[in-house]
Image 1: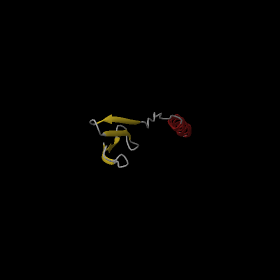
Image 2: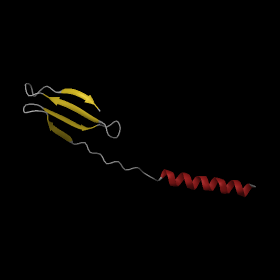
Image 3: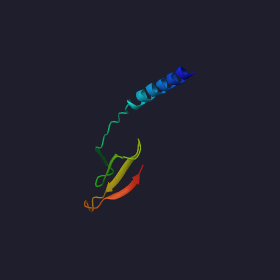
Image 4: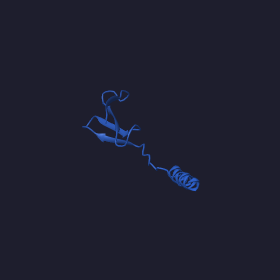
Length: 74
């Protein structure tokens, strides 16, 4: 019965080592996307960093380019 316990422990250690050596690769794309809303205004967005598929949007009005409005976080 002792050799069965040792075999069980060895198998568990091998599984643990195999799982601990795997890695997950995530491609990070933090580039801005510029979209034209109309002739005078633009909206910019970029990939968020919270979860896959989220985007952060900002609206830049032509009346004051130094002012940026946060529209939504999708």
